[in-house]
Image (cartoon, rainbow over the protein chains, first blue to last red):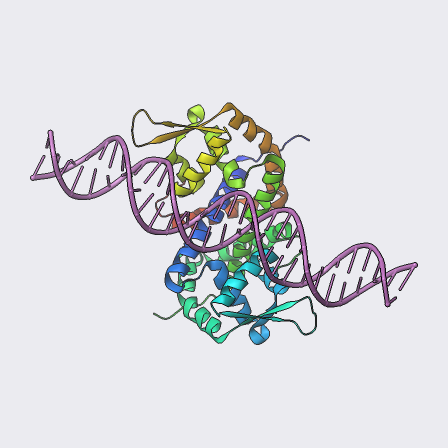
Amino acid sequence: MDTVWLNDAQRAAWVKLVAVVELLPGVLDTQLRRDAGLTHFEYFVLAMLSEAPERTLRMTSLAERTNATLPRLSHVVRRLEDRELVQRRPCPEDGRATNARLTDAGWSAVVAAAPGHVANVRRHVIDALSPAQVGQLDDIMATLLERLDPDARMAP
Amino acid sequence: MDTVWLNDAQRAAWVKLVAVVELLPGVLDTQLRRDAGLTHFEYFVLAMLSEAPERTLRMTSLAERTNATLPRLSHVVRRLEDRELVQRRPCPEDGRATNARLTDAGWSAVVAAAPGHVANVRRHVIDALSPAQVGQLDDIMATLLERLDPDARMAP
DNA sequence: GGTAGTTAGTTGCTTGTTCAACTAACAGTG
DNA sequence: CACTGTTAGTTGAACAAGCAACTAACTACC
């Protein structure tokens, strides 16, 4: 199989994408840890729960929404449960399943963290882009997700 | 300070970007670990060295090119040195500095890993996008990098 | 030419992620 | 209704990343 290398334009875009992928998590984590004592992934878990009916989701469903593996999520939720931000209970309908539910303290934590987080996202990402670019970004990322996540696990 | 929330278009794009940032590292790491025994970050370090004059770079310069902190790079380079893919030597011009140099074995490792890696990048990212989208992605990521990396540490 | 401040890099420790192995429960089939 | 296979989730160990503290060397200034 012969290799088809990237042309200049492709390589330039790829290197920049890699840079963003490398830098963005640190920027998000730093602000949230400082201001809310949460990693971005923890925040995202709480935020997904906060938007779910009954503030409750099955672990599998939560893993899909947060793009995490089940083991990773399981560890994180256990730590969040230790901090009483989340509560875990066996699912009544399916004995194998576990429901994760956002506690009142967890809700308060999300509400408290959200404004600073959104401001940070604006400052570093959204406000830097024109509305047209936001649309392009949406299209491009949607396309990539189909390839990165072939089972289309992302919530519609 | 009142919060200016994201509108629907912004939120959609943001959530997808976060998903890509979460999923892409795993896709890159999995292929490279399986086929070459390297993480993507290790590969990228070796690749940056392979393109440098004398296959050598100062640690600081290498950290900039790989978007890594110095402590992180230091650990990774030590492990790469243990595997004899990289060699570290004090810089003659500046006693504080360290030069990292790609060994012949390191060069071979990059050369062996590159085709599979490029194919993977094509399959999951580049080939999914039109040339116009590649250009848009380049522009958007360049804009974000200015915000994420204000010291413009990225190599020009 | 000593002293203060900065820059380059490493190291230890704590934390988080991944991988593989495991348990338990459900679904389908003979 | 046992038996096979699959799905849901947890756990433990290995490994990687981030942070803070540290050493060493260079620069500049009085």
